[in-house]
Amino acid sequence: MIFVLPIRTSIRPWRTPYANYALIAINIFIFAMPFISPFSHERIIETFMLAPAQPQMWQFVSYAFLHSGFMHLFGNMFFLYLFGNNVNDKLGNVGYLCFYLAGAIFSAIGHSLLRFSPVVGASGAIAAVTGAYLVLFPQTLVTVFYWFIYFIDTFEVSALFFIAFKLIFWDNIVERRITNVAYDAHLCGYVFGILSMLGLLAIGVISQSPFDLWAMIKRWNRQRIYRDVVTTGYDSFAGQRVMKTVPDKEVKLTPEQQQIQEKVRQLRDAISSRILERNLAASAAIYLELVRLDGSQILPRQQLLDIANQLVSEGKHTEAAQAYEFFLAAYGNYEYSEQIELMLGLLYSRYLDKPTEALRHLEAAAGKLTDPGQTKMCQEEIAKLRG
Image (cartoon, rainbow, N blue to C red; front, side):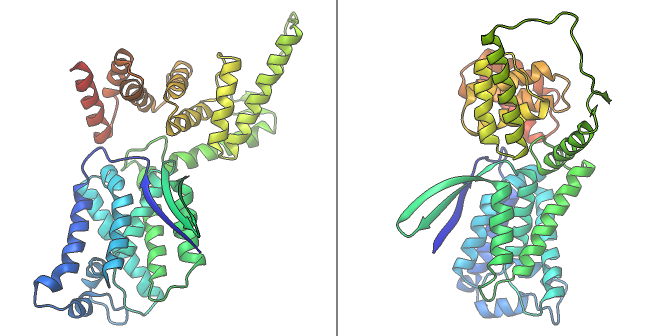
């Protein structure tokens, strides 16, 4: 038997998530009501739970603020705190509150259509929040605590994998063994959270990021089109048939230069293969070997960006800054260049102690950022550097 529990994520909200804190406080207050009021816990449950056989309209919301016991409450509030804070930060307080209540209602409707048993608990709404986290922050890392016989330790895994495989597929589809658990309400919540966030990103209601799931899907589609077109002899980026150019005069390379050239080719091919496998850790390690061998090598745009982000997540700040600098030099017209400028500014300011370089990049980002949280963070960092 193995016990697995996520305990933290690799990002923190830039703004205080007041709406999420308020939801947690309301859930705790309602659970404590029997201790401070004449109403018993059983009476509150019977009155406000969702009864699919004869549902009242208000029960589609009220059920989500009830819990059957302390562990039920604690587990739900822990996951709400873990994943809800950053979603609150992204959506804003009003948007997050509306999204949370909509997730509760959608989960209740799904449960009522599929099951006839009464239901209480915030799990469906929290599943919607967790699904939103998967879409908005799929490349962040989740630190997971595990306990297996005598072995106790932690490991890190991407949020995309942990939420999609462990929370959705394994816990709610494969391991449906615990009685009195509204698995279908959970799944409906996940579906609502994932699809609604993808939709809002696609139509631009929520500011897009190069790191969210929508951006990943678009990159995958571009790579798919590129692979399909290249196999027919066309370069999709140049828009023309690929032709081999024959130099007027063949440049003779020394055996050592030929060996280096072949090694560079092998390393670039290895990086492309690892990127397609989504093994970013391996591709980043190969990239560092490549730039040590030949510092003039520039990768394709998305490969270089993915590797730079991976280096940041591994704490290799100097190497990450160099990769971002290469990126801006080669792809200065990138549509999200302000995000790269912001990341570089933060790296130079917080980790590399290079205030001059930090100010240069932060000031370049300040006028272009559209996300209020990022704008505030950028301005605060500039003010701190100027002292």
